[in-house]
Image: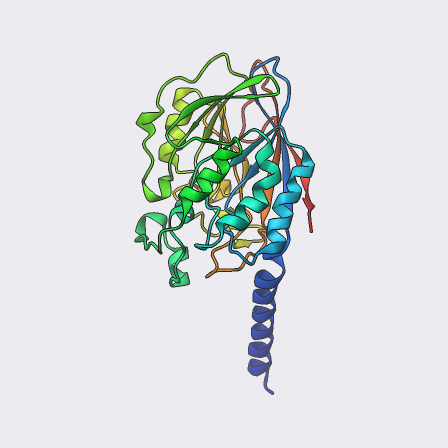
Length: 317
């Protein structure tokens, strides 16, 4: 075999091994991301928030359902679900089983596009195109109303175009949420206005972290916004990061905690699943986030991540 043949063979082998790892190992490498974020009012008691997003559940994903249920052992004070729970018309029972132990905690949720519509097989090249250039192709309608009813019956609050105060450990969290901006279903005008200045936390919740909705949250005076949708890029290149975000958010904020403006912080979850038609993750394992919220300094520091303490990712196999 000549040198060119050996090089092609080696390249093919590396590519096949990478695909096998991304599809067979990393997408099931459940990980917990932790951070301490200074967003509470001065004098407030710390609040531990579990952020879950983008389950993309199908009925046969038993290991994922067990992992999600085990997150209740973290004993969070509050749970925020930022949507895309479903990926199959029969996934509601499994999703509710997975969330079951967490539904005993105070919680809020909004929905994403894949709660409303099933994913469809698409040309993977479309994933690399700018979000504004992609024509939306919806699959069959999913039973999101059944999922909503199951979560509400257990006490979680639907924040879709709603402003609501939730009490957590005796402290008020003023919450406001949007329907999915990725589908252009958001109506910020329905929740616009100054949030309760007396709350320990003023929280915005959205599925897709589009700058056009982050800006009004910041302008109205929210302390923190939580979102999902990006999958952290799903495919990340070492020393480069996310290739795309599947929205108008910049690549540098595709996952984790960052600043948005001078006052507001946000957390973008890389999520726990993938589309059934793109079941790969590379350098971006599925994750949930456990965020310890603490009082902000009287004079906030400047800089994108100043004041945030990150913990090492903990695998939960």
